[in-house]
Length: 75
Image (tube, rainbow, N blue to C red; front, side):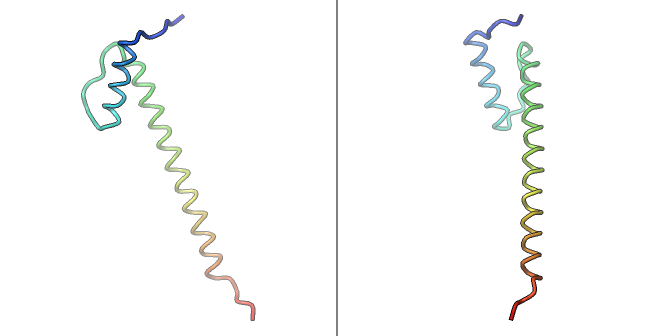
C-alpha cells in the first residue's frame, strides 16, 4: 500500500505542477517523475477532449448557420 505524501513533498509537487503550467522546462525531481508523468498525460488527454468538443460545437454552429442561410423564404 502506498502511504500518504508528506507536506514537503506535496509542496514540491505543487510547485513543479505550477512550473509546468507556466511553461518551464526544468527537469522533474526523480522522486516525483511517476506522478508528474501521470499528471502530464491527464492534462494532454483533457486538452485533446476539449479540442474535439470545441470542433464539434463549431461544426454544429456552422451547420445551423448554413440551414438558416439557405432556408426558403415564406411569402
